[in-house]
Image 1 (tube, rainbow, N blue to C red):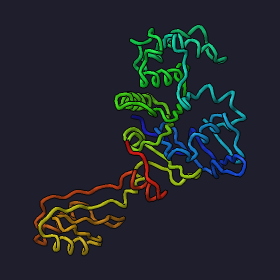
Image 2: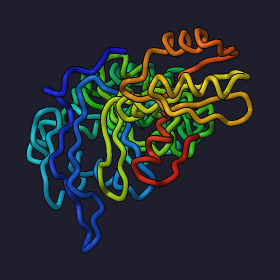
Image 3: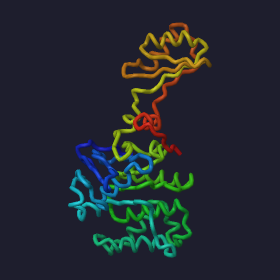
Image 4: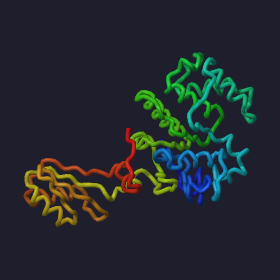
Length: 317
């Protein structure tokens, strides 16, 4: 997968973006930066403001205040120039159920005033192949599974050449097989050079496919960055399995950690920016006569970081 370019060339940038419905603030002063080439997970529980933010990014809703830059141009002022370069799947795909997948995409592309009718058939075939639906192209859509319909929706967003793909909850309602299909598709699209912006409430999905993420809570952006930055890699844990828990605790304390024996042959200690490398910790334990039966370093999970940031639970599967 190609890595994202520096933030000097972001595909999405918002500043103090806000949306109010009457007295209710759905989105409050969001400063979002999505680097080019990233697979960007947009996280938050239902009602956190994710879909409202996406609708403003795409010009489907007007912000109450703030600014939006999409592919380097202001929105919604430059919508006619920008949106043909953006593919989007928002709030689920809709198709003519008794037409084939191929026929649905042909009609969808024909409604695009910027598309070239001379290349339409070829582009539709390529989009279907890209999402793995070539064999089902002539089947009526009502015979498609939910996962196939989601992939067809993504194909519709890719019939024209795109620089940015925006997917709002692309695995919502899918069974495990459909979820895997969409996850693998997102990974393959990112590998082909697209920037992919994925809204989701499934942490496990984001951790498997995304390079960057942002967390929304009650309409506010509470964190953003690479996954390692969001996890807070400086706040992991050292885990030592030993019969000599008291001696191990003394060694870890001497190294500047705060050990917590569990009374069952395990000592855990939170790491920090000045924690020695793992090999030095093991060496200190062994030199002090501690019989080490097992040793590991655990990073903070995205779920734990989310709870730290918002105080809320989160769907993880």
